[in-house]
Amino acid sequence: MVSIGLTAIANILSVGVNALLVILKLTIGFLFNSISLIADGFDSILDLVTAGFAGVGERISKKPADTSHPFGHHKYQLVFSLAIALTLFVSSYFIASESIGRLRESIQLTFNYLILAAAIISFFGKMIMSIVLIRIGKKINSPVIIANAKNYRTDAFASVFVCIAFIGAYFNVWWLDPVCAFIIVALILYTGFDIVKISLPELLDRGPSEEIVDKLKKITLRPEEVKEVHIIRLRSVLGTYTGDFHILVDPKLSILEAHEISEGVKEKLEATGLFKDLIIHIEPYTSKESLEGE
Image (tube, rainbow, N blue to C red; front, side):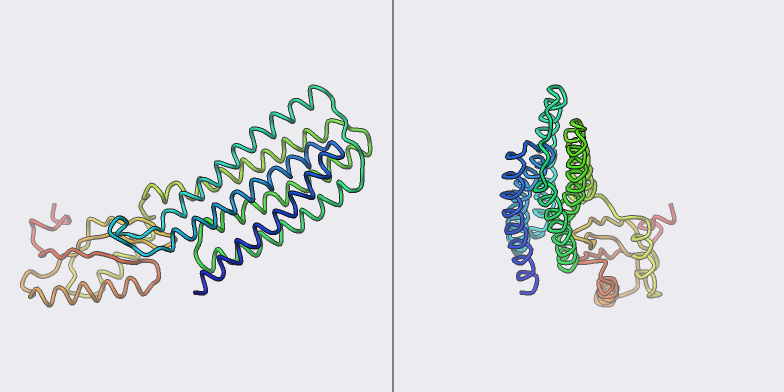
């Protein structure tokens, strides 16, 4: 219930603030012919789209496991995170194209203090949103909300370059406006690639680091009855690892004794908070089964 409430707060905050910023930026941007502010405004439109992605992704990912999705719906969050990255790439293309056209035509930005006011409001609005959403995303372990928060942080710094373009207009440096738009594009692309770098490996079931594997082995081998652990297959699910592995125990143990040992190992591993829904295969510790004996 707490996570649902925090998700709703994150979505309302994202949609509400972005809607206000879109109106402010585009109105002033088109009124005074500022491509950097227009770029920032269209980025806020895309933020409305990504906020929608975040809300839908969170809602779907919280659905319980069913017959068609026996491992749950968690990976939908990663899919929607990549959708956010895609919208950033698309927006970058259109903003860059418009900036090139303005450089060719030497279009002068009209100087007006409203541009500076819009940029300052945007900076503080996006920074506050980013801080709040990152805290919410970490609290409920939501990669899609964290991805959205990173996007807003980039938008905040983009507003700084709108201010630089404004200063350029004051001193009649016409090319600063499209150049600053290019820098905003670079920031947007950086955020997009950062989201892809985090989401794609997990979506493709990349295995854990050696540190995680070593931790699993260390805990598993604590009971003296466990002689060996091997064939470890884990995948990441929203910050935890699930999967299966084999343990080798004394072949003289009964099935019940071996089962109780494996359950004890599973409980200790999942108590760390790093592992979840593990499946442990029990094998007899013989030269035939042992990988160490090969």
